[in-house]
Length: 639
Image (tube, rainbow, N blue to C red; front, side, top):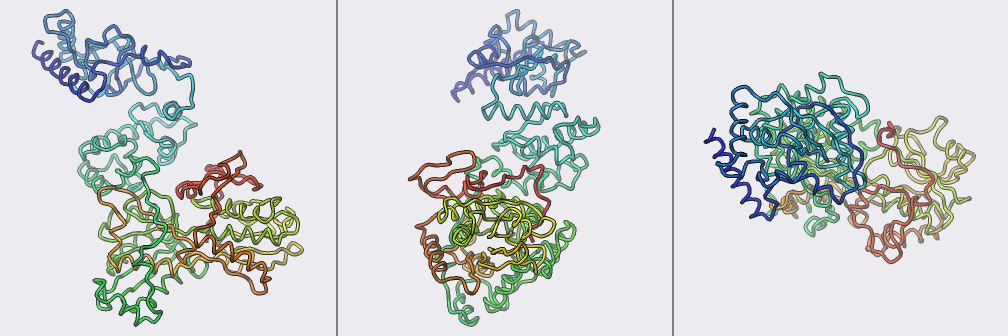
């Protein structure tokens, strides 16, 4: 049909001009030229497949390259044999459809046509979603680039769930998706699961594009992971498109952050502002007077804050300390701030019920005090955008929820130095209960602190639950005379759970020092930003980023406490190191650093950037132990 070809050629000219204006190649990419200088691997026939037309991006050889624009629309004049054949194929497609498959080569998750270029052009003109093709897969010869690793993950996914449409732009996406659907990348998925995922994805993709997702720097599959992280309880296939679009609009800033490079996702706020640091007299009346005229809140119209704890405060030392911080706020701000607490909210239904109750009570701010509650907190923040949500964690890129944590590695550095000064045989024990953000920086800071005083110090690392017979006995079997336990324990009475101890005869323990979380001070600093109106100044509306508070010793939220009777010479040494940390002249991660795998950085280098400390993935060379694999993460709770 003449008119169809003329319209297709017009689209081709438009595509060609657009590519030239954007300094892009205006014609089809040919695979032969693309791989000419690349090391290639084996070829594999994957048979007859329905492939997405949007992933058909070029031709195998240069022969027909200039006959098509880069959008696969024709460019040759109408009075050519090419145009007549194209028009005949168009007529066949609209009357009876093609019966013979095209022949393509797949390379790096894209398809290049060997036979059937004009059929692909016609189908793209008609906006067909797929085409039947005989596919040969061409593997890269090396797998050491980001692109090839990503393609390797796709291949692993494809063998268990043969869907081409699902494409991620970040590593780990396929494994995460599999877990969300209770599957893995080893065993083939049941056909019902494959069909359900396929239909669900196509439904989501339509809603995502309708919401404007084509303007974001993420793929529809990336966006679906973000969506499922918030609305993970819903069956996508049963959700109307209008509701999907509405939900995508609610989590739009989360989608924007997902498209950023890792170093651009999170703003680490490492010190409070000057206004937040101001310290009026300790009496509640002075605090009340200090804020008069500086805030919209008052005793008659207080700032209402809810705290949601994972476990009961009576049995959890972690939640108990946070609740002490909550009670400090009630007494410190003289009635301008009023709080309430909800305990034992580890079940999602209980958590959401607590949020609903808090909102009904007028909560302006909600703190969830465990990193394991972040998933629930994120969903609640989307449903209640008028409430400010914070979660006790670090390094998580969520714009809807701010996170807060302490530089506990500073205290662990001091405890490491203290441990080395008192160990009998260079062997020091370290018990880590859970593998979470910040855990490795704490272990390494402890190890570095120990090596400062004893270059021969070895840190014996134990992960997970307390071994049978008790932690002290297990450490003594390792030849340890001084050890530090996990920050919190499941039992408030466990003497070896918290801080640094000397071991005697495998059973008796003597406390030496312990790290201190001053949650009352931390919550005071955050609440000051709300009362002063500086909360929103932290966020840049022009630059969507997550905000993570990460305060340390200089802010008064982290410290150590000595046991009575500690020799004054030892206390003096540790105090010198502490002063250096507070003043910024000492940083455990500055200068020469060595990991178990070799040199991290050489002498003279400045301290590691804070983001690298948060995301640390190595252990110091004097640590005897290993990093748990994600599949074997210790089944423990940091209480």
